[in-house]
Length: 114
Image (cartoon, rainbow, N blue to C red; front, side, top):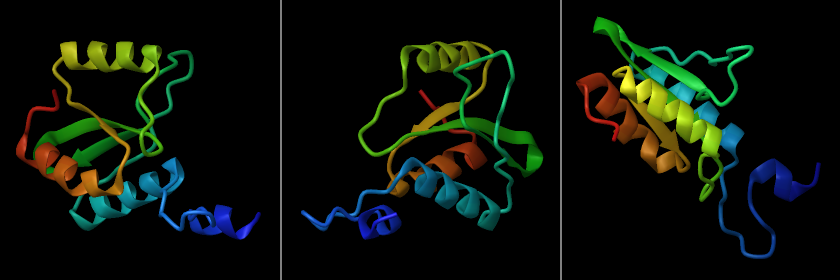
C-alpha cells in the first residue's frame, strides 16, 4: 500500500478524498457517540440494499448508503431506496463526511430524507 492509499491524499494535489470505508467508519463512530447503533445491513438474495441501518432510542431508524465523494447510487440501489421509502423508511446517501452530522440529526428528529 502506498502513502496515498494510507492517507487518502493524492500526492499530486494534496486534497483529502475520503474513501467509502473512511466515511463508513466515521458514520459508525458518530452514530455511536450520539447514542445509537449502525450495524452493517447485509441481505442475502436481495442486492442493492443500503450499507447500514442506523438505530436510535425511541424507535428512530433509517437506512444509509455510503459512497465515495461524488459517486452516485447505481440504478438497483435507487430502486431499493424507492422501495424502502414507499414503505415509510428514511434512506440517506452519504458521500461526504460533512453530511454525517446532519443525517444523524434528521434521523433522531424524524426529518424527511427525500
